[in-house]
Amino acid sequence: MRRKVKGFHFTLTHGRQHEIEALLAAQEIDIGLSTLMDKTSANIESVELLRLEMVLLVPKTSGITKAEQIFEQDRIDLPLVALEAKDVLSRAFQAELRQRGVDWIPTLEVGSLDLVLCYVAEGFGAGLALRHPRVELPASVKALALNDFQPLRFGALWTGCLSPLGEAFLAEATALSGELV
Image (cartoon, rainbow, N blue to C red; front, side):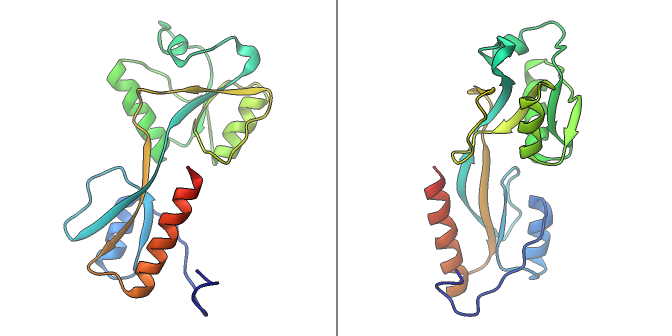
């Protein structure tokens, strides 16, 4: 955007979908980028930009070839490395597990997906992650597909009609998300 619009600047803050919607409603921000977990509030427009599938990362030496091998166990004793419980990815994963009647609480909660990968590579257990097209796994780690789990949806949120600058930003975000997949 800075190459296209001289003097363009933005502020990046962290927030969940409902927090971003509150900022939009208060007209404190023009556009929000968020994981789209819930139906949007009245007067909030949204467009999905990207879907990323959940995966389980396991050491290649584990002998596990499918996620079902883990979920079919009466008691899962494999440690789970995941983002903190309030994170969208962790909440979505635990909701899917509950629907299947599976209990698997994280043993280790970390602050980033990079750390999930590091702990799995070091042999601390299985890790919950997203299949990201630009992330290469170490040779010692493999990703197990969670095909029947809902992917996480990421999108843009705004209210009313976007300004020409907002439309340009949204077009750029759409193009960038298209490059990722």
